[in-house]
Every structure is written in structure tokens, then in C-alpha cells.
Image (cartoon, rainbow, N blue to C red):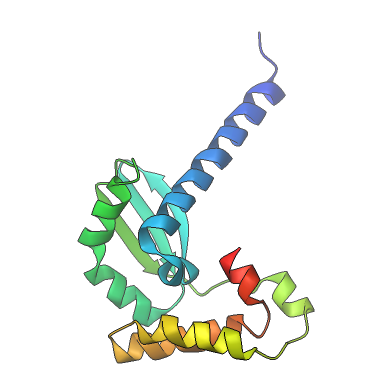
Length: 145
């Protein structure tokens, strides 16, 4: 007979690894810009549920469902559909405790290049505000790391 603690540890560890693998596949399939604005919530019965932290992105991602579903399949996941919903990003403790820094010229250039690749004007400006905000707390190395 197995102890309950042995069974729970194994099950919990496996779930963590599964979620990490799905989140990595999402990041690869969606790209850095989309991944930054989303969080993988769960994968159940072929449906990948994603929280989107910006309402403009939510609208855009709903138009991209088919393309993103196919990309996810390319990473070996049996995704039949994607489900997106809006959820305000939880304030991270490290953002609250770190003082703001000034965005470097290199970070601004990188952020502008990313934002300028987005065709939809509202989505582009929403992303630009988000990435500028990111670079007042984190560095380009943090973002690329």
C-alpha cells in the first residue's frame, strides 16, 4: 500500500511538469508579444484555456484562434480549440517592491520594433504601453532570458 503523501507528490509534480510543457509550447506557438499578454490557465479535453490581460488583445486573439490552434498542434499537443477570456493581470510582488527604472534607448528601440510589427493600431498602442511599462521594471535581458 502506498502512502497518500507519495501519491500526491507524484501527481502534483506531474501536473506541474505538464503545465510547464504546455506553457512553453504556447510561448513558442504564440510568440513573445502574445505570450507576454497572456497566461495559460488549463488544458482539458483538447481545449486550451488562455487568460488574456488586455481586452484589445482578447479581440485580436479570437480572430487568430484557427492559426494559433494549428501552431499548437505543430508542437505535439492535441489541441482541438482555444478558449480566451479577459482577466486583469495580477500585480506581481516584485513589481510592487522594485523601484521604477528608466527605460534604456536599446529597450525603447526593441519595444518600438515589436510594437511597429502589429498592424492593428489600437492593439499596437496597447502593446506599446504594456512593453514600455515592462521596461520600467525589467531589463531587455530579463525579457529575452
